[in-house]
Image (tube, rainbow, N blue to C red; front, side, top):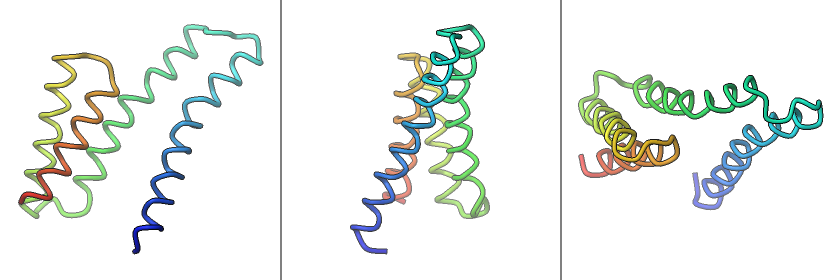
Length: 107
């Protein structure tokens, strides 16, 4: 796969992720629900679901392959550390993805 296709895939995935968060919020506002507790809980659940999705995707292909397993453990540790240190959901997700990618690159 060439670089242009990878960049287009990244842009489209980023746009899809953005719309995945934005559209439920806009629909709830147009339905008159505003910022209801149900909407807030639903939107808050998307972040942890993304982290779990990253874990599943990294474990699924080859769990017996040692570099993949070590990279996954490093990613999970980075998520846990970033969550404990800074809270939120964006920084832990980013930290886990970076740790996983760096470990795969270095191993």
